[in-house]
Image (cartoon, rainbow over all chains, first blue to last red; front, top):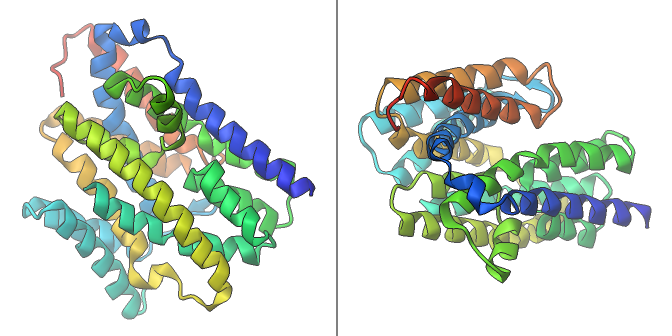
Length: 103
Length: 216
């Protein structure tokens, strides 16, 4: 029963953290700096999420088939492939490398 | 964009469902994590701590730390879409990595709105349903990694970042953020590397503000 309590507490905390961001007064977001920082924040967060999804395992770093997916996706983007094709190429690269025996 | 991200990410629910049941969670506890906590990184941390023999309180702490980045996403979504009333309560629940990424990657306000809702609601529905399937099938299912789904997620985030890299400044920031993330992953608790990258981006904006840096 106690695990249920912690699951529900965890869900409540997760929602609380999300709604907190929406409670920031709208007037704070009108400052001209906010527009610029928001654009930079998107770039910083996306770049961070790319690396997190490419190299992280549990509490460390591993270089595996995901790195191949990253390179293949970058090449596809350089060749102006559409988004959906880029995603499929990423999956194919990772799956293909694993078939060849990469971790 | 929203749909392809939704499909790739939702299929990871198979792993989550199967791993949660293997870690000792009941079918309904597993569904509750996906439907109610609904933030993938936190959910995997929660079941990971329990699977490793940690206490539920420790699982709660790790999961909550990983959820802090959603607060930053929420501020961004509010600045962009400013949902009000009941819509805001729903928007908060579906504010996650992917809905933030797909919506902020768009230039046009209507596309930002569509991207946020399609991805947010789509993943909530798909992720919860596929979690149930994974929990039901348990250990009989193959690893999604064999189909390269983790590669698809990497490619999707890069594809969302790519259109923003139009000049030297965004490239420089992206490289710094990527480096900072990679270097901090092994040394700080999970959840912090993304927050550190966010602090770097905000600091970058504040420092360059006085120099009238160009937008984007």
